[in-house]
Each structure stands twice: as structure tokens, then as C-alpha cells.
Length: 504
Image (cartoon, rainbow, N blue to C red; front, side):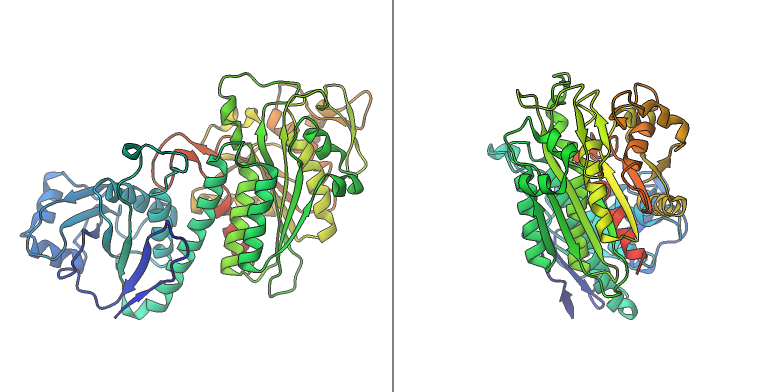
């Protein structure tokens, strides 16, 4: 019998699993078989090789297919089986391969399947390790992701997409398979939500739009939503966030989504920078590549994606997502260099560069988080260009006040392919933030910019276990590879979900 996992998004393929499907007699566009880099073929692959007259063995011997992780070889016009084509998917060395390597391999497979117009797919999943099916589902969905919302010319639109994917699974583990498919779907859906929000332009995704998106998540999954507008922020004394928003016609928002877990413990809090467009304010950015600053809300998008996953999969721990959101534009009313702001925490801030605005809106949001008495707080922000120069696009920076929390995030990041690199966090650098006229200034000069930005934020996290992730280099991808697709990555959704789920 074939069972179908509930389809939750009209743009996603339907996933099914079967313990008694015969791969050789299955009819569809392509039958996918995983093949390792060395060693004997798995039983299903051996049976397929026999039905195809030994072609799998021959392409391995010739070197046309090596079995390296993510390698895809499409065999077309095959005879002797029900499928129209066979795809060999490289799985690397036998018994090895992390969840991230599996996800990336299936991401590459997804692109190959879409390119070959394969809508109906069967995948022999037996060689996957425990937990591998969820990663495979994530890879298939994220690897086939495309952002085509604004394309209107028919030839530029994808003509085919994955429609139905059926896994052949071991009957002894069928309950586990069902849960893994559901988890993979929901995690991927959270990442794709974040990607969509990042990829939309600033005239579509505004602070109001982010609040509306949060409202949809709250309604769909029974979360509690609070949205602070300008008047509520004034009542809270959020002078830093309000100052950044002064140059824009768009009303700023502080978006708070709450999920009540079963265990009744202190909540985990994720805070995401939601700058929906950053022109730099009066300290105007160069025109070149300014259009990409729609991505400056990637941290906020990741928190929304996380809360969607949390709502769908319902972990034991309570989780709160906080997104301070505004635009940063030049205007006659805009925040100016030299202005002195009073934050919600009471600290005064000398503005020396209006393009160092992310730390200002995060300062008020982090202070707001204290009222929830959290177990731990993690913030994500495309905060500094210095981070891009230091770490490029492969690692995000992590700094903070709680080493065990940082160590946990780093270990999880390595496992799921969103790695973090810890930078020094020493008070000696705080000298750069001293002001002659206020409690501190919002920028510490050219040196150690990622470190001084984090030390600025630390002034607003007293009494909390806190880690800061600077995702300026990792939030955007310029290539289609593995689960990455060009554009917004949704970086941080999978890492934060893993962190939350590990807590119970």
C-alpha cells in the first residue's frame, strides 16, 4: 500500500512512501537509485543493474559515474523496467555522509530532475542512514526552489516542476519514515518562506508586510502575536528603533510571535533584524549594489521561517520570535550623524554613522526580550560588512556572553551546514565605542567592526544568556549548489530549529 504524507503547500510536490513498491515495475518519469563511491551495489541497485543488462556496473568501471556525493547520471531510454529513465545518485563512501551532505546531494538531484522535466519520481531510499530521509526531503525541496514571482514572459518561466515523489522504504521503519518526511517538508517550508521574503523587493516587503506574514503564521498555527507600532514604541521608550525609521514613510513594527511549549519552562528567544530596505540613511550607501539591500531583513525572515516550523512541528520548549522592522532612508526628518538617542534600556547613544542602524533597532528589541525572562537569546543580523571581509560567504560569525550556548550553536551549525566561526569578544575592543557626549556611540571605527558591533549589542543583554550571529556573508547565495539557490538563502532557519528541537 502507498501512503501519502499531507501536502502543505500548493507549490511543493506531494511526497509518498511505500514499503512494498517494486522499483522495477514502477511506472513514471524517473527511478532514482543511490550508489556509493565504492563497494558492492545495494540489493535494489543490484536488481536494477541486472534488469538493465549491467549498465550500472559498466559506468562505474569506466569512470563515467564515480558515486561521489551529489553526482547525478541520467540514463535515458532504458528498457526492461517500467520507468522511462533511471537516475544514479552518488552517495559518497559507504556508511558515511552527514545529514547536510545528504541534503546537498538531493538538492543537486532535484535540479537535474527539473532540468530533465521529471515530474513523477520514485526514489529507492534504503541506503539512507537513520534521519537521512528528512534531509533528503529538505534537499529535494530546497534544491528545486525558484523565485519566479515577477516573471511574466513564458519562455523565462519553468516549464516543469517536481509533482509526485515516492520513496521506497524499509517496512520495519515505516513510522519513522512518515515522521521524517513530514519534518523535512516543514523545515524546508520555513526556509522557503524566509527565501521568498528576502527575494521580494523593498516595495513589496515592508515592515507592515512582515507583520502581516507573522499574522498568517499565528493564525495558521495558533501562535500569539503582538505587533508594536510607532505609538506603542514611544510608550516603551524605543528611541533607537524609532530614530532609524524617521526617514521613511513606512511605519516601523516590532513583531513578537509566541509559541507556548508543553514543558512550561523558560522560553527560548530568537531576535532577527528586519531592515526591509537599507539605503544607509543620511550616511548614504554607494549606489552600486544598493539594490541588494532588500536582503537586510534576512535575520527577521529567518525568525519568521523558524516560527513557522515551530508552529507546525510543536517542540516541547516555548519559543518567542522578535523582529524589529523598519526602513533606513535619507529624508529631511531622518536620523543624522551627531544625533544622540535614548534607547529603551535608558542608555544614550551618539550616532556617528546612520548606516550602523541594525544595532540600533536590535538594541531596543534585545532589551524588550528581557521581559520574557528567557532561558537563552540568539539574535541574527546582516550586521556588518566587516564580517563579509573576514569570513566571506561560508561561515557566519558568532559572538556572545555565554560560551556553552556558543559551543552548542557551533556544533549544530557544523552538522547541518550552517557553520559559525567564533570571533574574539574582549572588553578591550569596547574602548572603540566610548563617546565624549553619550553613554556609547554606534560605531567603533574601521578596525574589528564585527566585534565592536557585537559589543555594542552586549550592552543591552545584561542578565541574559546571549549569542549574536552576524550573517552578512551567509544570507545570500550567488550560486545554485546543493540546497543553495541564487538569492536569499534562508540561512539560520535550519540552525535555529535544530537548536530549539535539541532543547526538548
